[in-house]
Length: 375
Image (tube, rainbow, N blue to C red):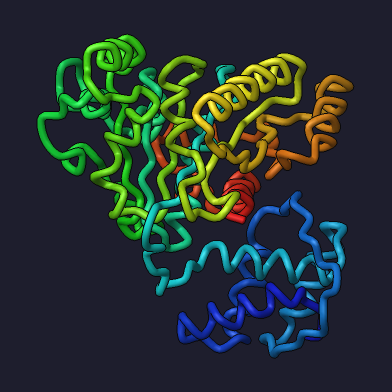
């Protein structure tokens, strides 16, 4: 095979092959074979500045690869880049080390319901775990959709839960409440903190505690609860409820930039739809972030937007809205996720998306979001 590959991809491929004790040609053979057998990707990778790259492939494979590229209407360079990128995403580094210090904190939020906060939270958490990081996925929404979709029971009323720990009434260790997803793709690195029915009373309970509890800061309630488990994780992802109340303030406070933390590591990931109502909801959330930041002198970073459930067949409203989201520039659009069947099928099967359909377009979008939200 004689083609070109971006320098960053080539270097990442070289390192990953060495980590897995593979020859480059074996890694590329696997990458090309898997890419040809999998679905075509609609994500175009940036191959600007790609340099010459060559390796041996089994007889006939290079011709078959070029034929697949032609069928999919892409250049050989783009095809190779997609194949290598997909292989890297599905073969995480076995030597990924704990980040040390504070975990990255991704707050997936929007006060508008139905925009895909749960799907994005779960998918991004899975992408990080797949890449070798230890991840805690927190179902912070009392509706419990995330827990339900992964086949995890909600915590009944009155039992020890995230809420009881947020108001300083925890009866045991929060470690005892987490559930580990056993799928081998995640290597026991993905834990879920289930939702609890008591979450519907969270704002009221935190408000009362703030009024009666000396030295208790309501905005720090989530941080108070999660502090004892932070050392166990590299990334903590919070699936927020559709709310602009105290619960949302506590989540945003938790995602603030901590002293010494690099900008753009922790903060808000905001799923939106390509429609006018999402723009209104986004402006309301942005106002809350601005008010909280100003009142408490915080730095809350926007990690990016995710345009979810996109379908250009919905016409001018969808296409013009997408153009408007992209034109913002800051925050950037991390990914556009098309309205496809794999996510719904994974939910029906109560399986993680990246385990159910690891080569799907939606799974690749989740990996793209994870990479973009850790810049």
